[in-house]
Length: 151
Image 1: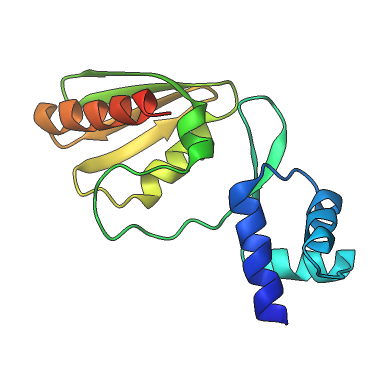
Image 2: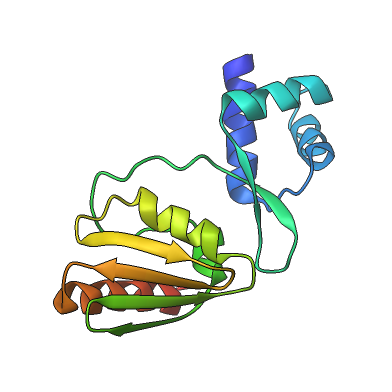
C-alpha cells in the first residue's frame, strides 16, 4: 500500500506541476488513495521531494536528483526552462536565467559531475561555469544550446 502510494506520488509530481500538498492530496485521492496531510508530508520527506521556484515565480514539487552515470548534459525540465541564454568565451560558459533561478540551475550543474567542469558560481540570474579548456567550454555551451532548442 505505502509503496504503491509513493510510486503514484512520484508519478503525479513528474506528470503535473503540483504546487501544494493540498493539490497533491487531491490528485492522490482521485487515484484511489485516501491520504491525510500528515501521510503526504511523511512521504515527501522520505522520498526527498523538494520544492523549487519556477520561471513564473511560483513553487512546485520536483523529484529528487540522482547522480548521472554519464557525464553528458542533462537537466530536469524545470532547470532547462529556467535558462534564457548561453554564451562561451575561452574556457568560460555564461548562462543567463530568469531572476532567482541561477542558484538552482548551478546546483543541477554541480550534480552532473561533469569531469571538465572545474566549478561554477551563481548570482541571481547569471552563472559562470569554469571549464578545463576552450574546447570543453564550446562543447558544453553547444550541449546546453541544443537542450534549449529542444524545449
